[in-house]
Amino acid sequence: MIICESIAELDAALQSRRRNGESIGFVPTMGNLHQGHLSLVDLAKQQCGFVVVSVFVNPMQFGPDEDYERYPRTFDADVAALNGRQTDVLFIPPVEEVYPNGLEQQTKICAPAFLTEVLEGASRPGHFDGVTTIVMKLFQLVRPDAAVFGQKDFQQLKVIQRMVGDLNLPIRILPAQIARDADGLALSSRNQYLSAEQRAVAPHFQKALRELEAALRVGKRDFAELCAMAEERLLTEGFDRVDYIRICDPDYLTPSKEEDSRFVILAVARLGGTRLLDNILLGA
Image (cartoon, rainbow, N blue to C red):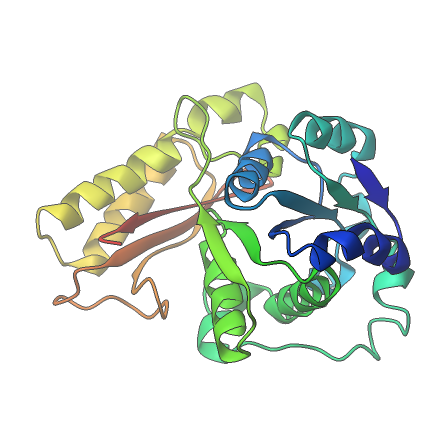
């Protein structure tokens, strides 16, 4: 695996591949990799002969109350994991390489507000501007044929798909299914912060969403009542707080209508200070 810390090194590593017309797959990450991330790399490898992974903790997508400095950096473990997945290039640039003029002077890419100012965006103003800006910069540097994003961050996936479509980028966006532990909990870097007691409660998150899914499948359409019941179940099972449970149109993230046949259930719940995120897609 070739490790590149500068844009010049990345370009040199990719030049011959581009010249030979090889298909390049790309997986952007912020590191602290787990099996969920590695499943994205596996999908990229299946679809493309050559795979680039980036590890970059992007300061632009962190809000003032979010601790960018404390985000876990696990470089050695990430390198070992990616070597085991036959990654071809790892791009791990410093902040000044990506934002040479600083964050304030950086041109930003902003997706439509109807996708970015709801759900996660409602409580994290500017977060998705930081996401789309860094993804666009990385797309321009790597110039991949395909890029893989996990369905667990469903809103982020929709935002990236919209950006790629609106700007006519010649990149296939490959959604990867949510990787889960045996008990159903979606894999996440945040899971490491759960205590043993909290980890025992956490699987009830997906169980509550599965009950909601089952209700939709048999034709129940009282969305507000269904979401309220799921929230009550989580609080009863030991969750400290439910930020939201929503049933939405999977393309526009607008509230679902009774006549709809496709849905996405989006939810965020908290155990102590750990914020867990999950979703279920129906009728895709």
